[in-house]
Figure 1 (cartoon, one colour):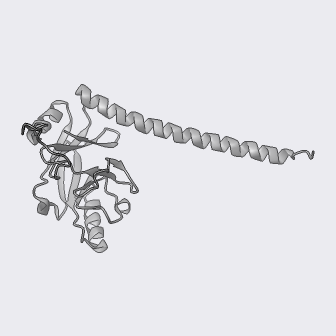
Figure 2: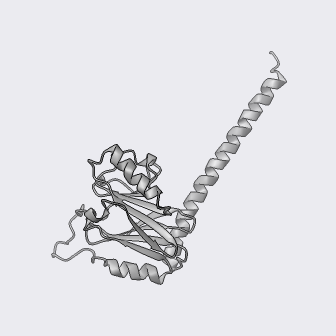
Figure 3: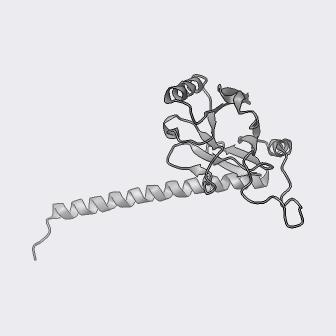
Length: 212
């Protein structure tokens, strides 16, 4: 049996070490990301949200299931936007609210600032041209915002190249869960009427979503 040259053995060992290192980095990043999400949920449940920013909005989607039981009673009691705002404010978070019943008011980017944190919100219709989207993105970029949120019927345009931190889809597929899809933007499904959506931004700028 021919002896394997030492150079080839060294190369194999080197490649194996690189693969192990990369796998370790990937596992670390995945675990760290999961822990950060868990930390946000813990802080929310514990009522300790100093340093968090929360964007609240009323759900306007058509419910996917009946909202009343066989006796005609509501299954879930509607959540008030004001109540959700008070709750998060009492937890120490900086709270922003959106008016999802007036999308026209966001056709031009609107900017909100509290405690030195600036958020941009804009509405992008499905028939918006690439040139129009680029124009809106340039407007947002020129205002030095810390977070940008786009509201759209359906993010069929390439959201990842436009730098939005979060995209709220009004006509999302029922199976869509909040999170990062094929783009770099955090995708959020519009909650049903009677509930309140919340986008949480942690002190480390990690985004997550809740439906109350």
